[in-house]
Image (cartoon, rainbow, N blue to C red; front, side, top):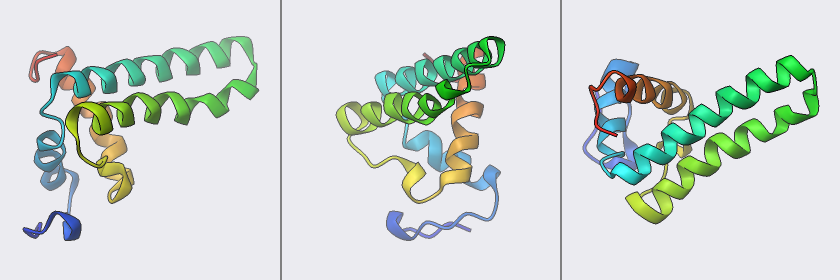
Length: 107
């Protein structure tokens, strides 16, 4: 169960966390930046495997988190959930991207 203080939020499952995660991503530009970052991460990962240029792997977190954090700091005006809930936030990025692709969440 989550508590009411956002600094002390505790979640027992991803299903419990995801509504909180979505509430932290109400700004369309922030969601779009997350989607772009996730798409670029996948593209870079595929490109790295194909080229076998493993040095490119260090760019993955910079691209993935860079786009997301710009969205939070400049458009959403909140702290990324990654700071308090890294695993659930990582999963949330991919679930939100899927939900955007299937039209469950607007772009």
